[in-house]
Amino acid sequence: MIVLSFISVICVAFSSKDGDDFDISRRELLLRRIGHELLLQSGDSTSRVLPVKKIAENEYQIRFENKLSFQPVSLVNTTQRLLAKDPLSRDYVVNVLNCGNPSVVYGFAISKNKKDDIVSCVGRKQPIACYIINIKFKPNGMITTKNKYFLGGLSFLAFIGFIYLKSVKLRKTLPDNQHTDMLTLGAVLFDTKNKKLIINGNTIDLTGTETRVLLIFALSPNEIIERSRLQKEIWEDEGVVVGRSLDMFISKLRKKLEFDPNIKIVVIRGKGYKLEISA
Image (cartoon, rainbow, N blue to C red; front, side, top):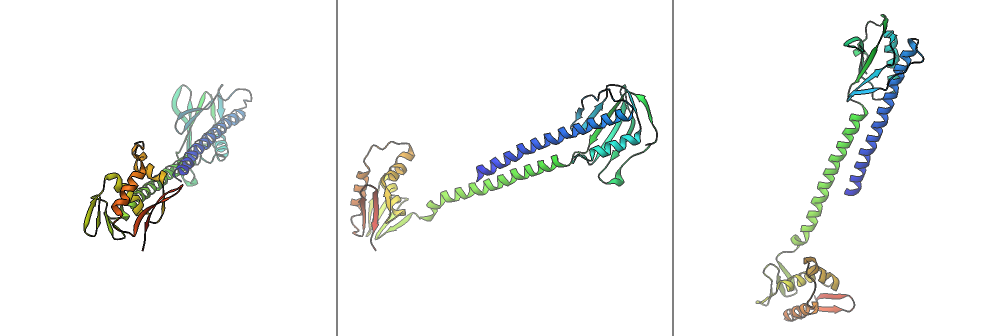
């Protein structure tokens, strides 16, 4: 589930990036269209609108091949009409500058809330000159929203991962917590911590390997334990190749348990062993 969630978030991130690139490319086409219509309104149907230049994160520049004149009211109406097709362009500021002079010749601001629009001097036609149009957009809309979703997805993934890892850790510790240091096998007390068997007041010492083998049986009494499992959990998991016979340890455990006739380790042919505890 963690892997699938991570892949999903990564896919969302890449798809969001692709979507943002598409929206930005579409915006630049709309900006070129603004320049094109201004040239037509100026009576120029042959000169080019130069490539739209991105001069800041949310600011673009429209440039022209030749000089032109424009009516501010036409610039305002054309810009509003075309940028209304861009879902990212709800708030922006437009400044018209002379090519050789950084001062603003004309400017206006459009807001999603119409009462906040700033538009003036729309009746004064601007003379023929070399103009540059800068349009700066307020950094909001889909890009910011997608980033929030993406960060929210990462936070959710981190939370799920924390819960998952915690549950795994809990499951791993359960086997140790479920049995105490002292297990009862019929009339036999199995002291796992001190590696001893206590039978009728008598104490029998166990080796480390014998303790681990008997513990596997004690946690699953009357169930078949496969030889392969015993070999893996006792030797292979510790990186040691099995060199001694498992049967030897089983035989030693049988002798140490023979004081209680109700407990015996039996061989299940072709499968493994079973610790039988009679009622």
